[in-house]
Amino acid sequence: MKAFAQFATSLTLLVSLMGSTMPDSLEDLPTGEYYYQPSSSERALGQFVWFRKAGRTVVGMIRSESGNFCFRGFAEGNQIVNATRVFPPYDPASRQDFQEEMLDLSRYSQVEPDGREGDRTLLQSCIQFFWR
Image (cartoon, rainbow, N blue to C red; front, side, top):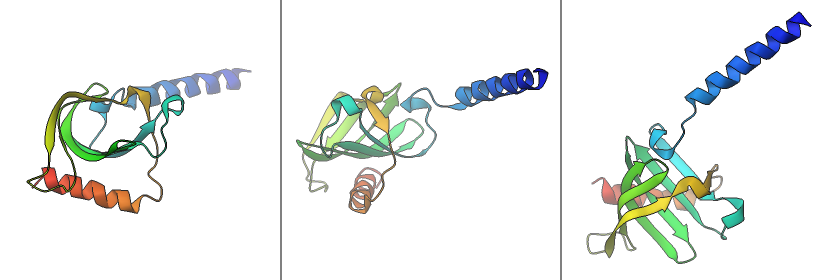
C-alpha cells in the first residue's frame, strides 16, 4: 500500500509539472509551425488555419468556405490581432486589408497537418510574401 501511495504522489507531481510547462495560449507557444481546425461543434468542411509563429509574430494562411488568404499579425492571448490579410495572387498588387481582431483560436483545436503538401506550399508563399 505504501508503494502505491508513493507511486500516486510521484504521478501527481509529474502531471502537475507537465501541466506547468504546457503553453496556456497561442502567445505562449514556442517558435514553430501550427495547424488548427475549428472545434468539432463548429467544424466547416476543409476550414483550417496554418501558421508559423516566431516570438509574437504570426504569419500564415486561412482556408475557409469563403476562400483562402494569407495574413501576418500578432499573438495576444489566444487571438491573432493587428493583422494584415492579403488575397491571391500574393504579389505587391494584391488586395490587402487590416483586421484589428482577426481570429480567436480558443474555438479551434490544434491537429497534425497530415498529407497537406499543397497547403504547405501555400504557407511558404505566405511566409515569403510577408518576410521578404
